[in-house]
Image (spheres, rainbow, N blue to C red):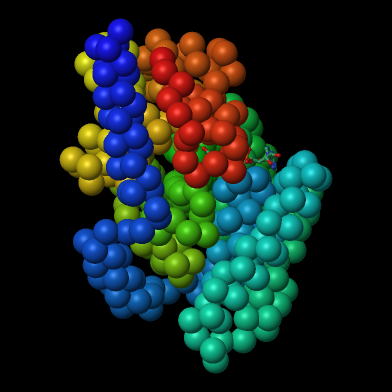
Length: 357
Ligand SMILES: NC(=O)c1ccc[n+]([C@@H]2O[C@H](COP(=O)([O-])OP(=O)(O)OC[C@H]3O[C@@H](n4cnc5c(N)ncnc54)[C@H](O)[C@@H]3O)[C@@H](O)[C@H]2O)c1
């Protein structure tokens, strides 16, 4: 009895220690090295901003959900006339509302650091550059059309076949896909020389990175133009080939799967794996917590897609507990439970306990 209580106390202390570690690194603060890297890249960005993006003055963003509304916002804030399109009237209205709130908030934050900055005027200017529509024809005359619709290869290909017919000949297309191959969409659009992947991260307004994805068919000048445009929207850009998951997700998603598999084998407890990667590898969030954060359904759909497409790649596999969690509706933070329990659902910034496998 005494032994059992002692073990229980030790397990509790270990869990608390693990959570304390995660919380400490989850406070949103960047490390000094990260800050230095971002400062250096921003300096390089400013130097490169002379990049000629004169050909881009009007931008269309199709799909105004989680990602699209953020992309429309940063485009307008960077000075581009921007049209946001969504087929769903409710998403369109919510996207507009989210943009208005976010622009005002970011500008008032700027004003609190710089008393000369006129936040209401800046907000009004940005919002005046935005318009909204429910049909794709509204973007037909845009110079750049960024697509952020659902992550479904056949829906996206159909969308691009149609857009290719409607958009002006010189328009450039950019897909925000996070896991699909870019080349089949580019082929469907009938303009593969004017088509890039442009992978922003969530939340778009705050995340610094944008991956620019090049297929073998794309024109180098188009890549330069879109890269320059993305830098003007305040991002640090990196380039890569049209390879599964590009850079970030190719390295990240298999790592999440490997961490889940490690817990499934019983090599270490969920909270110990997460604490180890935070405190030993300097990651801001452990892999199982991050999987919950991303959404277990999203992780599963990416891994399943890659397994089907690249059956010989050993890094791509689906851990059985991931399939079981999704089947049980345990999708991570957004549903209130995944590998952790998230007391306040989507609003939670920290889990309240471990759910297990
Ligand atoms: N969610 C993320 O963290 C994240 C991160 C990076 C990239 N992405 C990628 O961004 C894209 C969008 O993801 P999301 O999370 O914003 O999705 P979402 O579901 O929030 O938004 C997609 C929107 O597209 C709209 N839509 C669908 N078909 C349309 C069409 N033909 N015309 C106009 N609107 C249409 C839907 O009504 C929906 O509102 C996906 O390709 C996804 O892989 C997502």
